[in-house]
Length: 532
Ligand code: HEM
Ligand SMILES: *[C@@H]1O[C@H](CO)[C@@H](O)[C@H](O)[C@H]1NC(C)=O
Ligand SMILES: *[C@@H]1O[C@H](CO)[C@@H](O)[C@H](O)[C@H]1NC(C)=O
Ligand SMILES: *[C@@H]1O[C@H](CO)[C@@H](O)[C@H](O)[C@H]1NC(C)=O
Image (cartoon, rainbow, N blue to C red; front, side, top):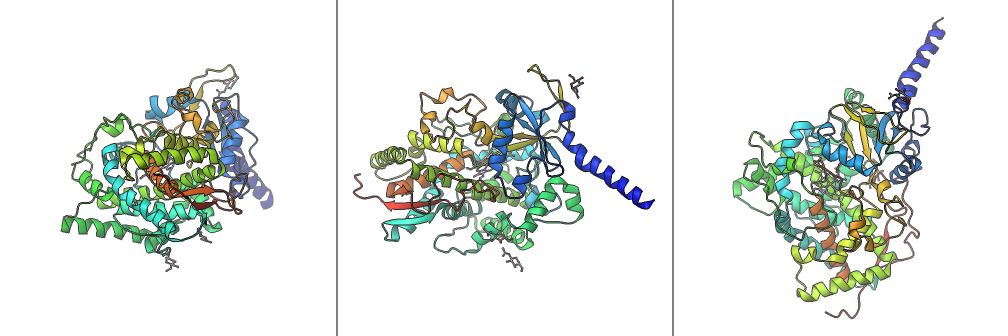
């Protein structure tokens, strides 16, 4: 008798918790593929057999005739938005219904991991965004440029000293070290040189904090995504306590020292300290030349200025600095690796960029400034195209915060009710590689972003930094950093394909972030006979 009950319970459990959730979209008349029971559409990704990028492209292309489609991350229903107008509707026009991002850390961990801008929700997010956005305006970037420029110089000096004809480099590692030094300097006010001192504490802690590989961590991560509550009950933390401790006390000590000794430095800690005192205001940029085509505009929510009621605590500050670090550590090095890989494979494009850089160098007597950098048109085209083809953020998301109905437009659609808590996915990499939007999408072609051609790009189909009020607050910072380093590298070196370079490009199936299989190997060849 008991075993009958047992089986019945098992069947019911299977039906309600594992099978039924994967009918969520179908029951709402939304197209969906055949998800694997329990494992959903991302099972290959979970098992390291398909890169996230490939998965998104596959699902995006599976539904060519739909404006939106359903898929399942294990049993979690996700709605992929394919249509540019619908993306605009959700992320801008009806933003009020889709305010939040999905949490990337479980809610039970220390506030330093959850009170950051990316994870904050609703009105708390609004206040914090308004408080932080003045930190990232063009004028603040101009003063921070000085710090970045030094790191760029330090980077090439390191390789120039190795008197070799061709230096063989794994760029992801090399650039992660550079990005680490920049963000350490610009966000934390800490000076490190991770090429000279490869094991410095700051770098090692950063590596540890951003390392989500290893089976145990992956499972914890997956569980916290699927069921934050269960994960919280079990008291699982994906961050080691000494890593948390390290960043917390670093901020604490820095703030204390600055206040005591009245130290003022053009960096983010300083700006946040100003913001805390309510002294920071949003300045509308009057500049014609912005940091680049890919820059995203700040919405009115970000422009209202500091909310005086918002009391930013030290732990809030620490949380923001830490998310800047996270955002700057992986994404920027990913973006620069892909770009250098493409340049090594396309000598004719590299040659054109060399010419622009040499001319700029000559015209400015080798002195690089923020404005000089932003006037380089071809540089911007190359970066824009690189982020089109291989966006570092392959997708972004929104959580429905207020019930919403997507009205039917196509004959096969019925009104779609999106419920509070539903997950929306914007498949950036799918859109960027859609042949209808970007003909011949596998071709690396900066001309797509030339003055003549860039108007052909349909609105809301180029989203390397997301879109709407919840877009990337650091887009200018990221572009400036990338351009600075590329300028320094190409002024001295030619990027070449070496034996270890994986040609054609293969995307790693195991890495959480987009990465080239076997590493991004490129040669730095000393340029001869530089005429300047
Ligand atoms: C190549 C480098 C980078 C890429 C590709 C990138 C991409 C993105 C994307 C796609 C989003 C989500 C936008 C959306 O949902 O609409 C985002 C959000 C965000 N990014 Fe970046 N990012 C980069 C660098 C940075 C840097 C350097 C910082 C900070 C210094 C930064 C800080 C943030 C923050 C705080 C958010 C959350 C914003 C909010 O929720 O209000 N990012 N980023
Ligand atoms: C799905 O479509 C059918 C037929 O068009 C319709 O009767 C039904 O109400 C729709 N279901 C939902 C949830 O909209
Ligand atoms: C954190 O502490 C543990 C145990 O003391 C140690 O094994 C680990 O290497 C530390 N992690 C970092 C990043 O220092
Ligand atoms: C990440 O952590 C795992 C184990 O937790 C370790 O095996 C791996 O080497 C680490 N990766 C990096 C890049 O540090």
